[in-house]
Every structure is written in structure tokens, then in C-alpha cells.
Image 1 (cartoon, rainbow, N blue to C red):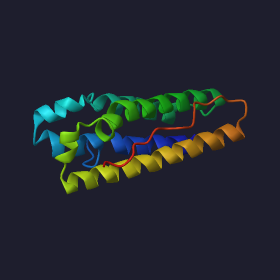
Image 2: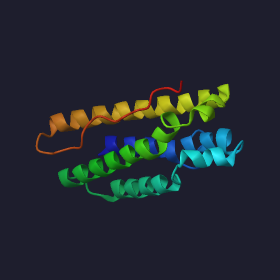
Image 3: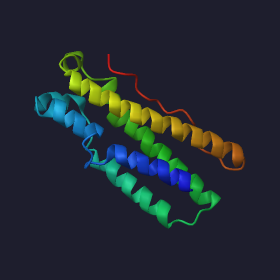
Image 4: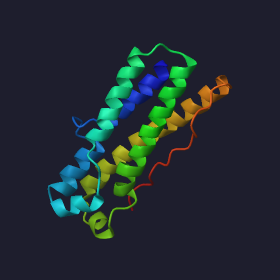
Amino acid sequence: MPQLGRLVRRFGELVSSGQIDSLESIVQQHIGTRDATALAKLRLPPERLVENAYYYLNLRLGAAAPTLATLQQAVAEFNTLLTDYLLHYVQPVFQDMPAEMRAALSPKARSELEGFRQRLARLCDDCEAFLRETEESLRTVGLPPRHLAVPKPLE
């Protein structure tokens, strides 16, 4: 499970509230400080919800004995966490952002959001590869679907 642990920790780096390049930090800095009502239009849940789920998953991965059952459970939990993050945090910013808010983004904000999107896309690609390789090597273990919906760049 070391490879899964590395993927989970990379996810933690993306969602950690202490990171200045997390999605929450970028959005707060470039949208929230300019207009609190604009930030409310995105309807983002508090990122600490994902950060807490990540924290406890990471703890369990470190404490669990590596068995097929714990691998299957951890992969399913991580897949759910990552998918929820993509749906409830990433999609509102990259796909559902109102046009007037998108047009008001500075070049710096766009650049930082694109940097975040690229890091997220690399993580999703690596997660899909891990799921494919694990499924191929362990035919007896049913794993979640391998496709993660990564957002397109901002237009």
C-alpha cells in the first residue's frame, strides 16, 4: 500500500489549508478578498471537510496491516474522497463559475488556477494508472471505476 499512501499524501498537499497554492487559498485570495458575495456564488463547502477526511484516511493507511481487504477499502474510500472533491470543489470553480466572475479574474489568478489544475490532473492520471495496474495484478479485487473527471483549463 505504499503507492496508495503516496497518492493520498499528494492529495493532502492539494487540499491542505496551510498551502498557499491550494484551491481554497487561490480562490479566497483572488475572489474572496475582492468580493465576498462573489465567493458565496461559488457555493463551495468548507475545504476542512475534505482535509479532515484526508487526515483520517492517511492515519488509517499508516496503521492498517496491508491486506487485500484493507487495500480494497482504502482505494474505495480514496476514490470517493477524490471524486467528491472534483465534484464539489473543483467543478464549481473551473466549470460552473459565472461568466462575469471568470472575466474578472486577473492573469495572476488564472495562472495560479491553471497551476493547481495541472497538479490535480497529474494526480488524477497517477491515480487512474494505479487503479489500472492494481486491478490487472489483483484480478480478485474489485476496484472503483478508473476515470476521474479533471476540469479543462479556464477559458
